[in-house]
Image (tube, rainbow, N blue to C red; front, side, top):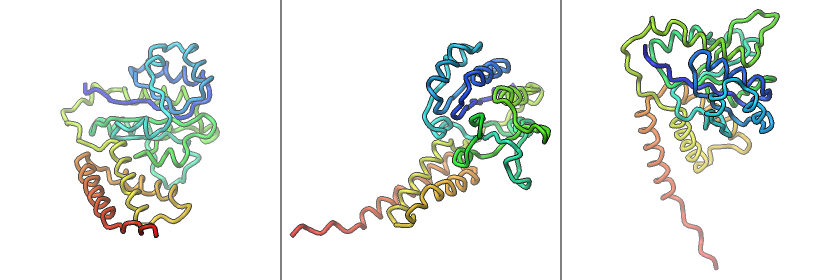
Amino acid sequence: MRPLHCKIVLVRPRNPNNIGAAARAMKNFGFTELVVVSPHPPIWNEAVSAVNAVDVIANACVVETLAEAIADCTFVVGTVDRSRVEPKQVIYTPEDLSRDLQATPHRLALVFGPEKNGLTNEDLSHCHRTLSIPTQPGCPSMNLGQAVAVCCYELMRDRAQHSTKIEPPAQATAGEIEAALQLALDLLRISDFILPGSEADLTIKLRRSLIRLNLRDREVKTLCGALRKIEQRLSGMRLPAPPHS
């Protein structure tokens, strides 16, 4: 059976019981890598002392941003409430994700948002795909711990029966894509392309465009090399500041 490389990422969780339940669900199904993004300190401390899956919590990585959490991943999937997205939008189910991972293995990050409002548009701009657990319209949202449990179960179900010999492709990590994005933004600033007040929206659009390209790591390295060369040339073309009189 091919190992599944997957980290569970909890973004800004607010309930210590939910953090504990998520960690316990991970342990139930053999997942050990938990990353928590910007947790509220009192909440995080309470989760550490209250959870049953002590080892999962003790070994969890706490970071400030989602970009840090997913920097080494090649496929990032954000979970959403289906009632909050447009009907025409294509959304994974846990079964869809499990099936795709059988054919093309990835370094996966499965991202869950805060309990009250879920992932923001900025959070989702880091994701290759979105995932929603099919639920009844009258009660569409799920408890965080339950959602983690359902996804972990589906990802591990019947994996031994679908083992193949396909080698993982050399996909670009989220960190490599983010580095290319920042280089591109530097060039756009130098060329005065970015209008005042538009940088945040432009950043999201460019990040989504790069993610949709599904680039290999070699392609991203070539792109970064080209962008650095252009930046060097543009910097060399700048006129020196006039001398003081």
